Image (cartoon, rainbow, N blue to C red):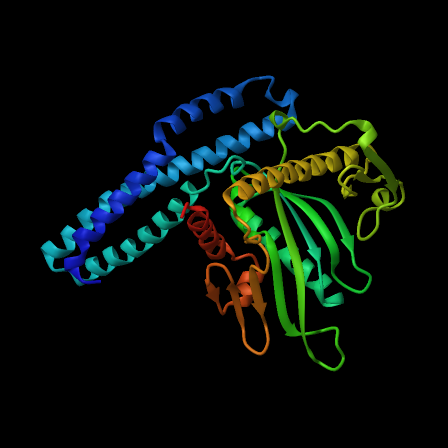
Length: 370
């Protein structure tokens, strides 16, 4: 990094960080923090456990965001001093330290800038993710399970709680489908760019002739419904079936008719939940999933009307969105953003932040008016 570039780079970083601070509205965040701290300290908070969890989650998220921005501002201010010190003393070691810090700050500001792009109506919500095996037989079922692990590992890396509502296991290996929630602010806005068809190319471990196999899995991401969404479902529009849970689980899970399947008759949407021991709990969880899918359907219908008025006949951007090639070479590539990496094992172990950030930036560009 040439020293002559430093003042201009510092000015650009300062302008970008100032823009981020303005979008996030730090004063509002500090006011929200005071309000949430008061709510968290209320003696009756845990009378409503669901509300208590939301308050604490929101509190933790705002504390983290605010600390992150304030820390970056301090580091950027200190960086200018560090470069001046290195130049004044002609100290190569201090210059190297300053350049390393510059690289780190550039990356951190870039990541934070992506966060400001999550401004959609439902972006702040928790995410409800469904993964389905598609074409490819047993390899597709195995791939769907690989994706389930990838996303749950990603959530673990960030400290985001997850809850699996339903898993339908395939006969030979893998899963037919799974539905789980990621319970963290902005998880819907973040993960929504993962929606679409994922493709895996590899030597099939299930083919005794060792042939290369291409398989597919679909990922659906919808926002978790809140009370303000007004998704009312009349009882006569729902068919309820109960059955015995299948797959791995404790004795109570597998020996009672606790699993619940809900069919929304007008749309044909079917959801199921078998995670809980209680039929009542499973029904409540299944209803949450059904409401989220109906909300997503309503949004799609509204968007279709807007697109029709705009004359937009383009297909969904989500389809065929990423390829995972394990043979004859190693590469994961996003087909929308062109972002790629050869570290396939890291990606499948949950290191997908770069893909998500590139997807969020791409979506903003794709959604921009022509």
